[in-house]
Amino acid sequence: MKRSFAALAAIAAFNAAPIFADDFAGGLAAIQQEWAAAHYQTTGDARSSAFEALVAHASALRAQYPSRAEAVAWEGIVLSSYAGEVSAMSAMKYAKAARAALERAEQLDATALDGGVYASLGALYSKVPGGFIGFGDDKVAAAYFAKALAVDPDNIDNNYFYGEFLLDQGDYAQARSVLEHALAAPAVADRPVFDAGRREEIRALLAIAERKASS
Image (tube, rainbow, N blue to C red; front, side):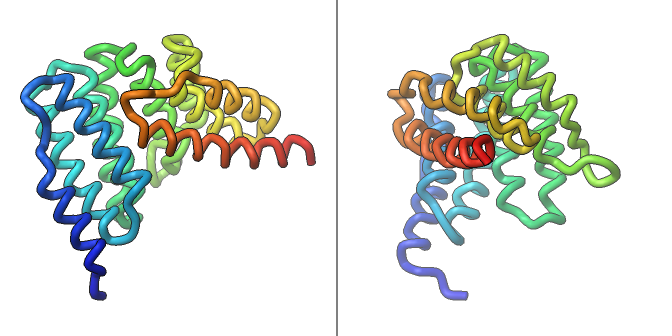
């Protein structure tokens, strides 16, 4: 299949992007911005290539700052996202790698990313298959979401992931309440692409929750 000029240009841009800045804060911000661009602004072949490059960038940041929970957690977040981009045969490998990274971040600083370490673990356990296939477990997921919200009950991601979980569980009224709370979170001013994209996802879930709750 031939790739469009736009797709090739996007792939080149992601592969040529600097891995991270010289300082930790700048490096972390670069990973976050790259993730938002890949997740919310990239499609098709370019999306897969963007996430593949991002995995390498996040790994490099973690290698430079192995004792910083935020760097380790973001490697886990990136690996978790990449698991959704690859084939079913490969997805579990990346999901397990994501869990290992997030558990390492939990050991370093469980409250990192305003509870995002817990929320990301909760999302993994809620979405990965259970049984003989994977490690998914709704009870474990619920416990992680509770921990995330205990760290920061107003965080947009903590509420988004928990609301999504409640929706999947069929608790539509509670899901609507949690998602409304997520939408009321302050804007993430330094990550505008992420903020706009996440709020669009929240509104989409909220519409489903409202429809289900009223039916």
